[in-house]
Amino acid sequence: GQSLEQPSEVTAVEGAIVQINCTYQTSGFYGLSWYQQHDGGAPTFLSYNALDGLEETGRFSSFLSRSDSYGYLLLQELQMKDSASYFCAVGAFSGGYNKLIFGAGTRLAVHP
Amino acid sequence: EAGVTQFPSHSVIEKGQTVTLRCDPISGHDNLYWYRRVMGKEIKFLLHFVKESKQDESGMPNNRFLAERTGGTYSTLKVQPAELEDSGVYFCASSQGSSFSYEQYFGPGTRLTVT
Image (cartoon, rainbow over all chains, first blue to last red; front, top):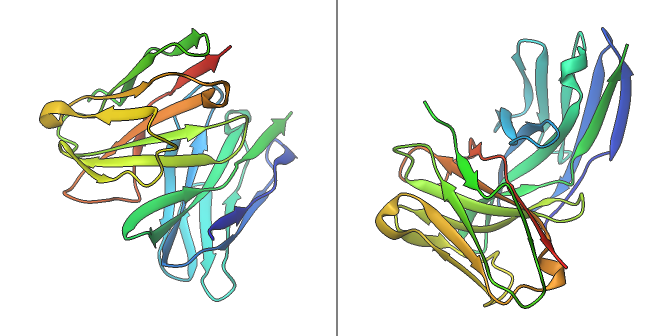
């Protein structure tokens, strides 16, 4: 079957760095995406890793290790507005079709 | 450019009733997806349209759920008759191109409560 594991909650202070991990078990894997969702809002695409290594986009970076079935989202210089839920999502070929398989989300709370 | 819109934002219905959710994708996006999130769990895939055709409906829970996308523009998801376990947030997403994309643009969701 397909499964993703990520922590349910993470707490950090403004200005700090936080890492949200994601491990997955899936067949037909071709990439790992991250989405951000503020309360009541729409999930918003943050990043996609198809190859091993680190991808940096401003304060956010995403990492993938295909051999370890593991990735993480790194948020630097945390701001209050970063308080949100973060979902990892595996892009996989499953059941004859490509699809996104999401984790349950990590709720990040940033405190002053 | 307008984003993905969904209507209604909230719906409260009784078990056994019918509800229809609507999604308007970003103009020009041929791909449209429906997802559901139940009680803080994972966002689960329901189905994928390419234009007006159902590309993949493997995530639809049962035959009480019917999705349509006439004309390849907006889509509707009908639940009939609704059951308690259908409660959750229903998200719609769309993407560019002629096939599946990992970069999808989501709407804010419809929160469905079945009592």
